[in-house]
Image 1 (tube, one colour):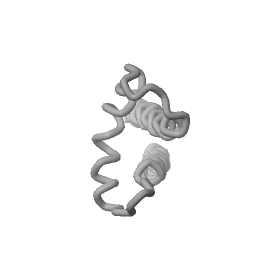
Image 2 (image 1 turned 135 degrees about the horizontal axis):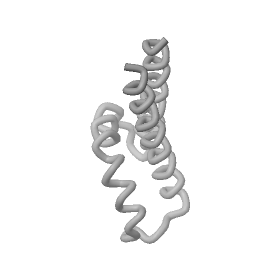
Image 3 (image 1 turned 135 degrees about the vertical axis):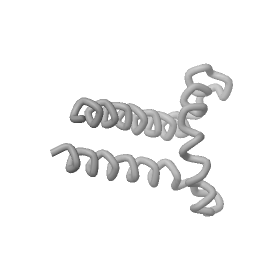
Length: 83
């Protein structure tokens, strides 16, 4: 059971890094057709799009922050459940 929790936490940590990478990439405005950027968008959009729909602020996308905080909360809960 503990191995499964550690694996889940590792995956969640990688996913949170992908979200942060997407935020940083949006600041530096790279080539929109760059394969690395497209890869990060394809991986993060399934989580960010529903959050974006729940937080309808025009001109300000808070979905990466909300997703990151939710992931951190889930990691904390998993550590508590694991002992």
